[in-house]
Image (cartoon, rainbow, N blue to C red; front, side):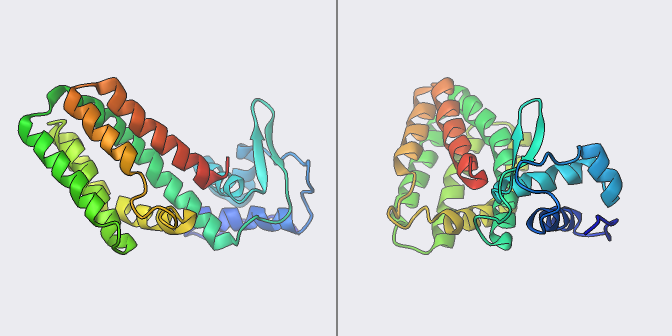
Length: 229
């Protein structure tokens, strides 16, 4: 099997599937080092960023693993999950990376700028999140986003607020997929309640380090689960 140039759209999915075919078809056995980004990009007729995302999808599928300073190596010839599910994981991981960039800084600013009205809003949002424990995933996610929106609003930065508002639809779908993919509410309908309570308290106390830390820690842990690290 030889690699061929790809047709336009959706390139990342096509590139990931083509590379996966090379691995599952035995052309790149376990222990083989993948060609470099530049080589793969030229062969597939896509940009290096597309190759990078495709390789990350393969990492999520448990087929390859990067080694610092050495390259990316094949570690399995069959994915640990079905391919569509693994691609969903990779897509949600993209959402989480952007989420961290926006929300971690917003939490730090919120701790420094929150008002009594902001504190009231965050506490109300936390309580609403708790009342959706018995609701479906979509309702729970909507309540979760409302709480995070209250934290972002407390930063009193209109650009951050606008960014979060524009990002919210993608975040909503990403969170619904996340809950389903990882079964986060299977044994805990109020998944993450203690951490969210800690976040609200840290912002209320004006502790920016604690607020940003609890968010960063949670997002990093979830991202690691998504990527199978």
